[in-house]
Amino acid sequence: MPSKAGKIFRDSFLFHWYKNVSAPLEYAWWRMRGSPAGKIPHWVKQRAIRDTARAFGLRALVETGTNYAHMIRVQRRRFREIYSIEIDAAKAEGARKKFARFPAVHILQGDSGEILPRLLPELREPCLFWLDGHDFDRATPVERELAALFAHPGQNHVVLIDDAKWFNGHGGYPTLGSLRQRVARDYIGHTLDVHDEIIRIFPEPSLSKLQSSPDR
Ligand SMILES: C[S@@+](CC[C@H](N)C(=O)[O-])C[C@H]1O[C@@H](n2cnc3c(N)ncnc32)[C@H](O)[C@@H]1O
Image (cartoon, rainbow, N blue to C red; front, top):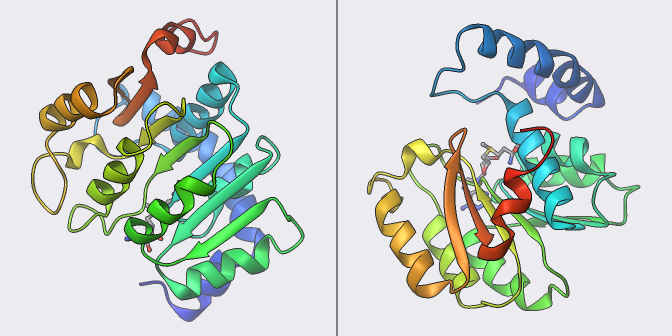
């Protein structure tokens, strides 16, 4: 829980300036240490979203877990629409204020396990999902989010899920093995891959697009 001063800082644009400066340094330090598993730099996640959107031509981003909206800040010019769902009312309000001048950024406050199933039928194009709303390894709405996505097959959505390390059958997380089986069974035409601790669920014939991306 950040102090009052910490919250004021995170709710300000100085926070994004600081993160933009520190992210490449954090990434370089991580690479120098041999890219250890565990805490993957935010920069890797930013690039995964950028590269996946480019490879699949996706122009709408749906994020669960807004936090202090740094991912929105980084991606805001890359997408035509951004939806971000945050359970914490103060964080959601902070993000709304930051992006009040961006009509394409939609901050939805509430539990993404409830809001995502209601949002999905409203989406009119293939989207990139960044499922990252959780209380660390203790609790996650990911099962409900995935059930809603799997109930809408044939949309050519691409799903990235952060923190593959927690998919071990505890805290509401399925195991990676059971998730792989469910994708094969319930999300016909999609395949699952894990890279840099990001679970990636793609429409199957398109997997080669990402593998041939020049930045990888
Ligand atoms: C790791 S942070 C998200 C980071 C952000 N997506 C990024 O890429 O920079 C996790 C966020 O998820 C939020 N959260 C936790 N449970 C949630 C839920 N059930 N629905 C929506 N948000 C949730 C937390 O309040 C926290 O802000």
